Length: 84
Image (cartoon, rainbow, N blue to C red; front, side, top):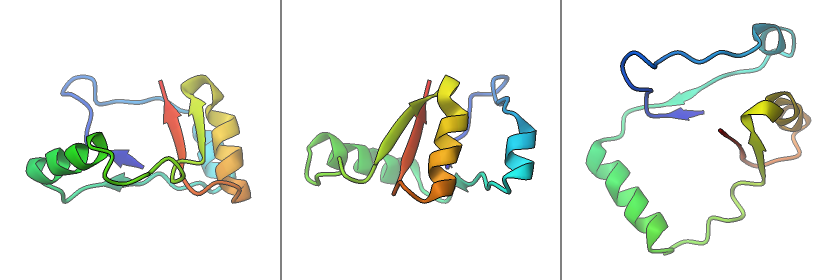
């Protein structure tokens, strides 16, 4: 899930489309929040008002994207994060 867009001119990402197609994966994005809502959510997370450690069950590097998709497809994770 994408939260927020990429900067103008750098708004393209590359991935192996065959993986998405043949494994019938879905790529989603989040929209509809305001800057003030985003700032408030970052304040809540920064103040550690909620323990969110259990929400992200797996983290993968961008080079491990195939493993991340495999974990998502298997249903083993609640929230899987891909970081670069």
